[in-house]
Length: 98
Image (cartoon, rainbow, N blue to C red):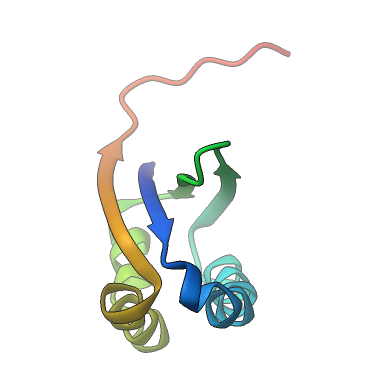
């Protein structure tokens, strides 16, 4: 499995436009082969953290390189985010309780 941790802060002047696009990106990610999960959290200070999980490096790359997602990434860099930090990790071990 591949886990992406995406930390970001939105530019206040573009929040509404971002919120219109985000559900489409979420639905698109969920429709991709190999999609496992995605959760987003917002801290009290406004930092957003999304954790996305894909089954394999190949399915993760397919999502990363999807044309519509690439366009959204460009908008994020140019418009939506005042800052972001991305970490892509491979799961070495996994434990669960029940």
